[in-house]
Amino acid sequence: MDTYRNHSLAPYTTVKIGGPADTFIITTTTDEFVQTLKNINKKLVILGNGSNTLISDTGIRDTVIKNTANKIEYLSDNTVRVESGVQLPFLINDTINHSLSGLEEFTYIPSTIGGAIHGNIHGVNKNNFDKFLVSIEIFDQNLKTRKSFLAKDLNWSYDHSEFQQHPEWVILSATLKLSPGDPATLKQTVTDITAKKITTQSMNSLGSTFKNPQNDFAGRIIDEELHLKGFRLGDAQISEKHANFILNLGHATASDYYALIKKIQSEAKEKGFLLEPEIKFLGDFS
Ligand SMILES: Cc1cc2nc3c(=O)[nH]c(=O)nc-3n(C[C@H](O)[C@H](O)[C@H](O)COP(=O)(O)OP(=O)(O)OC[C@H]3O[C@@H](n4cnc5c(N)ncnc54)[C@H](O)[C@@H]3O)c2cc1C
Image 1 (cartoon, rainbow, N blue to C red):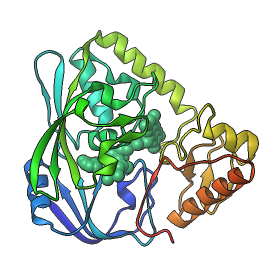
Image 2: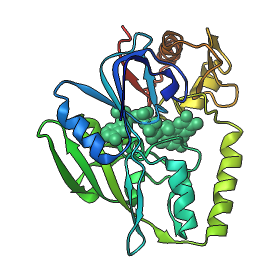
Image 3: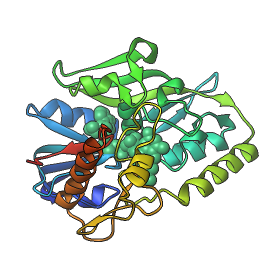
Image 4: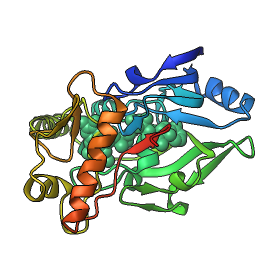
């Protein structure tokens, strides 16, 4: 376990933006993670890969924990138990090598398993991550105990999991149920999805900035209604390739990024469109 004081969080996000955490802890096993959670009685923040989170330039006064516990255990009946710090791209590859299918539709999402469950990520076949979840083990920070839930007993929807209503629940591990599959075919699927996504989606972003309004696309609105594709504030730029992605061209600050989000929202509102952020905000943006 490593503990840092006044430590910049920018390197721990895909967009490389964010000020320091007063205390930043990296845990490497679930036991270490739980022990750390037990010992901290004040507010804390869990960070995955920071691929969906804009951290403010002034950073975070609470303790931030990044858990990198990454055990993967293959059980009977096509199920696999994974710790929350497992990298999703690694797991996709590993399950394919074990002739298991299901996760390939989440190719090109730079998530941890904790982040994938928390946000109930959506894949290219329109399934959400909960489709593959059997059970989840959590640590309840209020009760200071470990608990397990059957996934079917929790609330899930597109972009939403019950975890978003329970900040005291820290995801430790999960069991996933997959299906038998042919590794060569599955690898081809991954290659095809990657080839398609790489042309429009950049890793120096936070993924889709806004949720798609019903029966419409945020990217279409930003491009065709607001004509903002390529628009830039400082080093934050609305992607030329996909208008719902905001890129850091090199030295973007959280303020640049946030101001761009506000500009899009206000111009959209003037034209009668409500754009709600899909990304999460950590720290002070006032
Ligand atoms: C290029 C690109 C493509 C993307 N494509 C998609 C896509 O196709 N579909 C999609 O849904 N998303 C997509 N995203 C968005 C993003 O990758 C996902 O939302 C991802 O699941 C976030 O995971 P993370 O580990 O980075 O979480 P973070 O951004 O670090 O955290 C997100 C939230 O999860 C919470 N959290 C993380 N770990 C835990 C834990 N162990 N216990 C409790 N809470 C936890 C955090 O506190 C935070 O509230 C994309 C992003 C990028 C950059």
